Length: 135
Image (cartoon, rainbow, N blue to C red):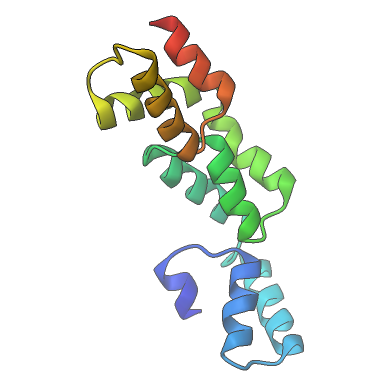
């Protein structure tokens, strides 16, 4: 319960943390089922808050998806958590590029460098190409 008091956690994260503390698997499953039943633990709520926080911090859909998968969130929940951001990825990528680099790239090498930066942040090729083709 202390873990959930600090922030939302996925079920898989809690299983991992509690197993490391030495709790038996059947006790972990029983307690996590109780917490989910009481609405205190929700993979959906975790995915939604995680996706929103990461998107606001300038990360793209591919990186957020990967991070949620690593945390044990189901693909359908990830799709739902990312859906409110679907029409905003291009604007978010443009803002991230401007925040990090400022001036518009003047040559191909600088454009490639900025594209690589956005790829590392988790934006897909289509979004990046539209940013540079719109300008």
